[in-house]
Length: 248
Image (cartoon, rainbow, N blue to C red; front, top):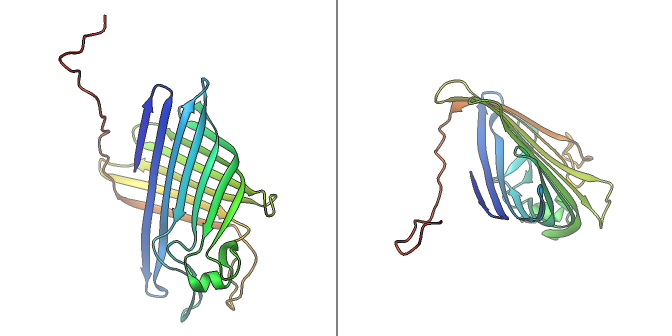
């Protein structure tokens, strides 16, 4: 879902991506295939032809528990709702390179890492100190967004977020990258191919014996074929009052 506002030099962009999916097989049972909550709100004031002073807010988490499956009978809790959750406030400059491409750069960004689960907080999951449920980070942030409709049936959108924590290992760049390629085959039939990649040095992998391993690049690929319905755009406008004069 999205809500976009533009008036004179003011612009306010809001997007909300939510996804939840399950896969059931005879050999592995039922497991999650997708789980995402991603709210992005960006307000900007235009100071040049392509540039705006911008404030950005982002919240990312998931709906339900996630597990690492050690074998067919053993699973280990690795995540839950708000465990982790990432809350980000950022001030910077947004450049509209083209109508399809925008680049946001910020040298001053606050990010809260939240782990609202006692068992995960106890083992210092996601970089929080052992027993703590949150950690505040301050660093640099960049977000590149590109969305292109090649024709009436084919489109591509991508978003790449990069964050460097000044306080702790600034050379370790956190990466969050989403890609969606969509093709509308028929009036109500849509085909989506998505590729997500996440790398965070504070997210440890899980070894086959259940112990913590080193950070790894997380990759998720999904091919989906289903029904899609596009709602028409809604515009709000103010009616001219009878007492108002028409412009000369």
